[in-house]
Image (cartoon, rainbow, N blue to C red):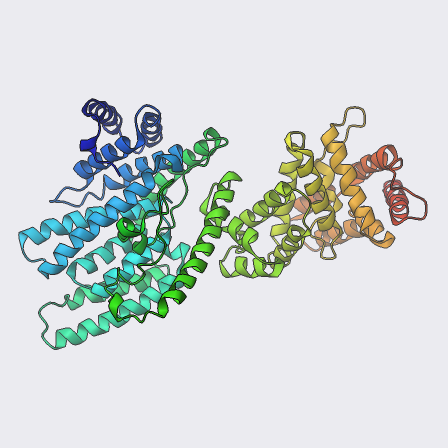
Length: 581
């Protein structure tokens, strides 16, 4: 990055004046407006100068040597995160903040670790600076600018050193972003619990041996209890207060993300940076792969960060290291490509981006389903995003891919509530058919045909009751959707199954519902209303008219074909059911 000193002094003064005007009115209520105001400056000034000036302001306001700024840092970092999302990857603000804050954090930690147990005033100053810098990193993670990988790397480094300042740092991370870590990667949290327990045991042995440089045993016991409570999802009162404030700011940043995805049409909005601690600390020698246009030298300095001696490594390991480096780089490139694609498809939450990467990166339906289960994506309520991502991906394909239908069926088998979400998602799609391209309309029609025709009855023909049937002025997109849907249904099912599909909601199913009403007197009114909602006579009448008007003249309607037999069966079932009712 360029230094502020190398820039035009007049430009720097203008930038500082503009930033001060905006940041002086920063509060929870003005977070969105301040972020948008700062983001607009990037169109007026060079982004390098803007980033340098923002970092200078953050240092002055949020990293004083005498106190921990736990009240101001969430707001400041929230505003910077908003600018990151609004400006897109082109302004590189998120990457700069991560690199600068982590490097300064390790400078402070290095000095403090050398001094020992933080008993002098100088050490206390370093401790506050380190705490403030760590808070900046924590809230960059809380607001989605960086991935949990970097935070877990920091935690492992603190556990490895386990001095007084490392214990302080661990407590800060657990208090300010512990719950988010638990949600993002619970398996890594289990590993951390084991590491802390082992380190605490070693520290106890050192205390018994009268080692002067060890951490107080009561502090070790406290941090072990804190991590175990976090693992068991039992937050403390002070952590609940912090979480409530963070969630409030997250909502504001969520609104900023939504507006960014709309305003940056055709451009890539800011993304979550999946950098590791090694990436950041080796940036000067290896380069910055997360920066747009920056060079990256690969993974040849693999052992240097952790103090390993390259001279001790045999030369014949170089080729294997390069091979593993290239394979990991390839996997990283694929993951970055999927994240970029998810951003272009408006996957505007971390959950949806994760689901998108799982669905698009899986080898087959079973692989995708198993990954979704392992990641806890199919729990109640969480499965709603899975259904919506599946339908979105299916609609965007250049040709219909049955993979999405089979995956949706597996999800519905596993989580029965997904059927209701599936129905609601199609209802939302019906409202927007006229705005969809023909390819998307065709893909959704074939998907619906698969789901209704499936043996496990993911959906019934009743889902079409929200389609506007108007023979005189039916929109072309609706005609295309229904024609493709019905054609796919007739070509892939037997006559007996077509009878069952179009007879849904007639006497048999109605009797089942009425029987349930008779066995539950207290809830009688509600259940009778449910029976009324199952009446699909109007839908069948509309379908019968549509079949006669559009599909009877279809070139596929050749006498003796499965299409012809199923068409007659559908018309017959619709007419008979309506006559009987």
